[in-house]
Image 1 (cartoon, rainbow, N blue to C red):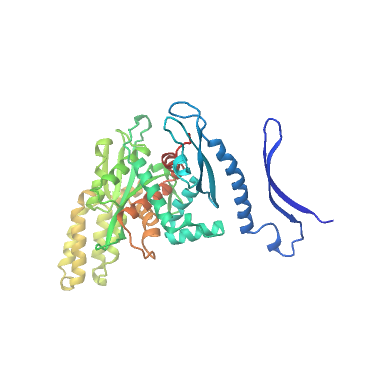
Image 2: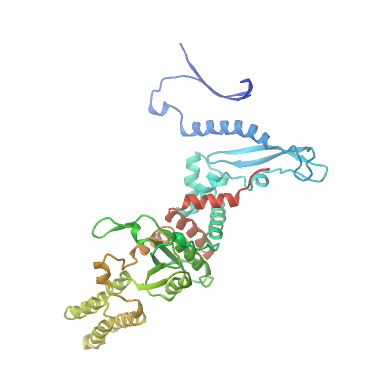
Amino acid sequence: MAKIIRFLAQCIDESTGDVLEESIMSTEVLQKASTLQDLGYTHVQQIDFLQQIQDFKISRQIMLNTVDTCPNCASKTVKAGVFTSKFHAVLTDHKVALQRTSCKCGWYGNCSLDGMFGSNIHPDLLKKQALQGSKESYKKSSQSLNAESAKKRSVNGHSQIARTIKLVGEELEKTNTLKKKIEESKSVPELIANIDGGHIKALGANRSFEAMVAAIYQSKNLKKVDENHNVLEVKTVVASAKNDDQTTIKALFRNACITEGMGKSTEVICLADGADNCQSIAYSIAEDCKKVTYILDWFHISMKFQNISIPEEQKELLQSVKWNLWHGNCDKALERLKELMKIETIAKDRSLSLKLSKLLTYISNNEDGIINYEERKHKGLVFTSNLAESTVNTLINERQKGKQKMLWSREGAHNILQIRAAVRSNSWKDSWDQVQSSIYKMAA
């Protein structure tokens, strides 16, 4: 006995149970699966089913959006033509027939989904495009999204993904730079802020530009994994590539600190590399908290010693410089470094002398930020911003540097960073909800 599988969709009167409309989606003879390929439905067949189901629901659902009463004068409306509007769902594209209505007072209803909802792209698809485009190139993002739909879709073109990144990035910035009020009832005694920058290859005459990144967290959320590794469980990350005298990054930084619990009784400990732009960001919140403590992080100090190749007989003296810095003895470190630079063999080596001279200048310029790192480590307090380095790597390097060969405008890089920072902050869900409510509107 042959068996047939039939899928159908029905529109039913809820009160009576009567079938008002019915459409057969598929009819086929049930056959044995000779291979695994024959079992169930292929990717393309599944998408085709979804297409038909969506079409059936959309065509009937949209009729409920017909405006019968004029929103201006409350008069009964009349039909003013049927218009076709495109609709892009997560995996399928559709043409929606909209019944437009009008009123004698001069009011006309919407004749497109854009006018009705603010966009014809479903929020789920827009979100996928934003996330995908923030992870990989727009071309690869287009290919990935098209692969999910089992066909090439114009809505997933790289230019559309670029527009999505711009739209979402700008909305995120707008939301995250609105001045927040400090809630003293939620303030915490201490916050840690890691501030750093990363260079991005630039379009145009300039070779690169710098993007600033900050990660703010409560020390209790820094958990030890092993002797050499920690994990930051909860944090707020912000970033900016704008050339606006740090206006945007400072606004983002202040709000991020408040999100993490900054109040008038909070001490904010900022760890950075000593650059003026990092210090400027750190001290921009001085009036909003109890105290800003700026520490030249040990990670950057130790990096200054890595590229110095010195004769074996002078290595002990160089180690003495580093040891004194580790214990906060800045004056002694500078003395030992000057002694080292006076040694004849070193003084004659122009390359080595230049490196040591730069190290001397770096230490001298950042004396105020050099503390007793050994003591802080012994007390279990943070003394390095290597977590910020990790954040810079995650936000910038994975998408905009390294093997990525593309060149960036500041605007393009900035919008990408807003999305990546929101995801990195573990606040993407709330951030997306705010973006969605701003982009889309409720139908009349």
